[in-house]
Length: 107
Image (cartoon, rainbow, N blue to C red; front, top):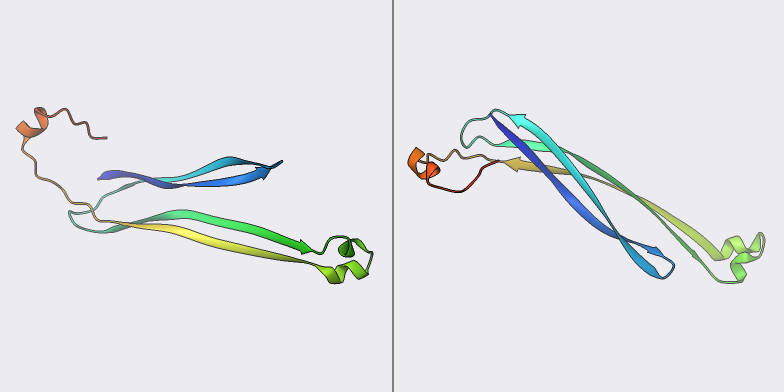
């Protein structure tokens, strides 16, 4: 039996009055699994959905009522993704004396 915690991080920049402000998002998933040595398992559930909208227009002409609609447009897109990880654990047979003499801490 082992505890698995994994995730990902994303850094984006939003514009605000000629400057760019970095924003980070972190997604995590944690689970407990019971598998044999060398037996792969899948960790999933990190879903993401991005929506973006692009607007284009010709200055001045696009502001004319009714006629201006011919000189501007909008494009909307949605992107969906899922992160799936395949993990293959290997149990190490380390002698007790090596572990006691080590300063390594396992979490």
